Length: 396
Image (cartoon, rainbow, N blue to C red; front, side, top):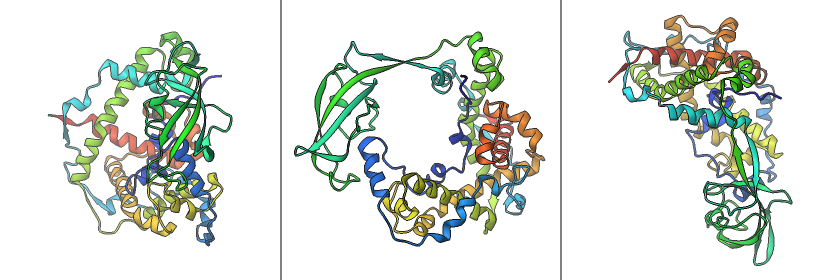
């Protein structure tokens, strides 16, 4: 079965995803193993609170905020953004536009070939830093097993040196050979998310099952034709390399270009209420999805610290996120203002012809089925605007 592969992941494409919105109001929660388990347990605590005010989110759709051309629905950006005549006269460091062959190779290996990789289970050597190992473990404190401290009979994969587990855990696996069972001794941090184990010494009886060795397929014209031509439209390795090089160059330059554009623009004192409400609902919808995945309430999610900080109420969380929401509204308005000046729209024909060029995937339905066509149009329109700006920059 052929795998779906595209160069800009959904997470990257969807600029108004929950994670992106949270960037302005707290860091992401610690992930991995017992840290994540403890946070999830906190999130699932019962909270008696009336959340009926958010019932409308059951009908939320990402495309609700945009029209059939990818513009903010009912909003003329020029009413809120003033661009000078020289808005497109942008100068950036020439080094940002340069991409070397190793950058292209690394990107293809990590983002494309990795999707087709095979995994070998290595059992005849000791684990080393950087290896991905499969382990079973059972944690005890004073000889008593604690909730969330084991793999529940199923092996878990861990990259040694990643820092995904608490300090000292991964280092003690290095040097052991698959088949060995040994103790890993650690101390939970004082500020650990689970108060029952915070600050305490623990022993994890650990079995190293195997070391995972990832083998990438050889990148040849024949491989591209068999695996990428239909999905991504590339006929050979040279076309793939050229596309990836352009995408890396665009990514490297976009931040500086956007900053320069933002510095040239001025915004109205009041942002369009419909757009602010939309991006707020995007954030709330993400919280609601978290709550459903944990089988709990939105209030429990914002209480738990899972979103980077703990809040007493959902309203407190949204209040703290106001600056991030406004920044997203400004970004949407600014890029749309440029699109309006340039006469750019993203109708259905544009979506079908330009999507593969910008996102490396020939069939946009992979995303439109989830996010709706108008939302994907808005993201493609933003990409086209940025491509035009980058194509016309001056270098210093």
